[in-house]
Every structure is written in C-alpha cells, then in structure tokens.
Image (cartoon, rainbow, N blue to C red; front, side, top):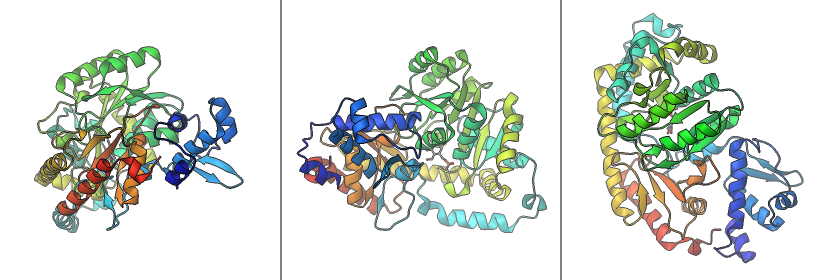
Length: 461
Ligand SMILES: Cc1ncc(COP(=O)(O)O)c(C=O)c1O
C-alpha cells in the first residue's frame, strides 16, 4: 500500500517532489504525448529527463497505479491505462455498502414510480407503425419540436425545428460535434477543469485540449481571447450553468462577453447546457448571441433519467444538414421509441415538473451539506447537483479520495477534471446519487470526520 511504502522510506509531508512528477505525467497523458496503452519510460530514464532520482519517479508511478491511471506488469514495464478515466470518476456500480458521492445523476429513487408508469402507458398506447420503423432521418418532427420546447423553456432561442437534432445523450452529442468540426491534432479550448467525458473523447480521438482559466463564473473571456491570439483554436466547449465540476454559473454579462470573443475569433461554440434546468431563473443561452456559430446541447439525462439517453442538439441553420448526415451515418437515428417517451413527458408538462422536483431535492441537499460541512470552503450554487470542496492543507485531493474509498465512500478527486498540469486541491461531491437522505447525511458526516482528522492519521502519501 502506498501509505506504508511512503512511510517506510521516511517521506515527510513536505516532500512533494513526486507529486510534481505525478502532475507532469498526467499532463503528458492528457496532451496525448503519452498515449493510451503506450509504455512509459523506465524510472531511470524519466529521472534523468526530469532531473530527479529513480526512487522519486517510482513513488510517482505508485500514486498513478493506485489511481488506476497507469499499470505495471512484472518484466514488461509500466503502461498508460486504456481509457478508464470515466469509470474512475463516475462509479456507476450500485453497491448497497458503498456511499456513492461520485455520480452526477438525478435522485432516481424519487421519480422512478412516476417514470415507470409514464413509460409503460406511453409504449402500450403506440398506434403509429412509424415508430417501429426507420423514421425520418433526423427523428420525427414532433420529437424535435419537443426538444425545441424543452431547450426554449430553459433559455435557448431556435428559429426553426429543422435546426434541432436528436442524440443518444449529451455524450453522443459532444463526440459527434468534436468528430465533425475538428480534426486530429486540432486544439479545443475548454474550461481549465471540466467534465471528464470531454477529456475522454479528446484522448480517444487525438484532439488537443487547452484549459482556459476560470473564476467563480466559469471561463474567463479575456483568457480565451489570449489563448486565441497565441494559437489556432478550432472549437470552444463551454458549460455555462452549474459547471461540472466547479458549479460555476455564468451571469448574463459573462455570457455576452464570451460570445463577443467567440464571434471575433470565429470559433465553433459547443454549449453543453445539460444542467441549465437547474438555474433558478431562466438564463439566455450563449448560443442566442452567436447563432451562426453555436451548437447547443440539452437533454433529459440530468433532469429525469440518464437511462432514457435523450438529448437535443441545436445547430446553426447552415450546419443542420451536415450534422444530420453525420448522425445518420454513425447511428442511423437515436431510438424513436425512447424519444416518443421523452416527447410525451415534455408535451404533457411532466418533464418540467420532474425537473423542478429534482431541483428542490438538490436545494435541500445543498442546505444539508452547508450545515454538515460548515467551515469548509465550497464552490456551489443553491440548486446544483454537486459541490466543489476545496481541501485544507492537511489533505491532498487524491489522497483524500483513496482514504474515502477505504471507508467505502466514493468521491471524485480534482485530478480527474484537470486539463493542464495544475488543478485545485479539491474534490467533487455529488449530492444526489445516494437515494436515502439519512444515508446521504451519514456519508457527509463520515467525510467531515475524515477531513477533520487530517491525512497524517491515515498515513496517505
Ligand atoms: C457536463 C456534462 N455533459 C454531458 C454529460 C453526459 O450526459 P448524457 O448522460 O446525456 O450523455 C454529463 C454527465 O455527467 C455532464 O456532466
């Protein structure tokens, strides 16, 4: 175990050179310099390159092995893991013993009965043979109209249903747009700490990511502008509301300033607004300000259920046909049967009520977190599904995540969201994935105790 190994070698808490090496290796994995599955240099070779000792490199490798980012095989060497990042950060396993504060989803236990009955009544009343066949190439018009209504409710203006396309969840929307509007080797600007699903797509498809500095409202327009002056940027991906992982939400003013930079540098904008329904007041989409350049993503995964796999993409009028052809060529079409359910929920108004009910649960859980984690430095919004907990000096994020795991608690370390070499010393906590409120309280109390005890007690690196 790392803690033991570290103690045996007499490492003190202030001896953190190996953490710099951990970050250097991670940055190389993120940038694609060390590709997935590739062999890492020997301890000696890397020590020589980084002007350190083989023992320090060995320690860094141990940390990355414990975090399942690299793996070691006796006699063969050490390799970069194939893309496990998403599984590491989103532990979707349902294990009753585990207090899972890692997965960002609605509190499904709350709406499952309603959803089951709506799905079965919708599917048992289908009379249109169309839904069982190959429907119109981008999905049925009424399904796209529902998508347009849903996104409009939360701040998007769309001139025509022809601009709305269906996708198998927001992840599919993101990967389609990245594949279609960037080339291998292109650089995509993203928030300096962002949703790991984007990092995963970029790694697998060989796109470079440039992290843009953020503040408590998310991406800084002046930092994006400086980046665009330095290098060619093909696309910018922005999470404007309840940003994953920091919770940052952009004001209208910030959205306008960012749109000005996007317009000036003629960037493609991908606005991932999957958490937009959690805003207490309707916020105007950034895409409304740059309609010729903006792709806007919304969907039902976070508001209702990720199992539906229903997302909507609004494309600029000039690009709708191109994107439709891509979706058709890659998946033919997202399942009409599921979109029939989604569309029914939206048309009846049930979808908005279910979204509001989840927002209320999130508000209540944020309040509970505020009282149990009193005194901790947290970034969050009153209705976010998650919070970003800045750690005291006595804990390092990876080390806290490991210590929590040993106590059957899953939290997500900042290192999983980092784009450049540095990240906050923070963890992301999902407040919605534990169904029972009493269990949720219990998890936060355990975490508060762990935080108060400090890492010295647990002996983690
Ligand atoms: C910002 C963001 N975008 C997209 C997704 C993926 O959503 P979906 O389940 O609709 O693919 C997530 C899921 O966590 C997310 O946080």
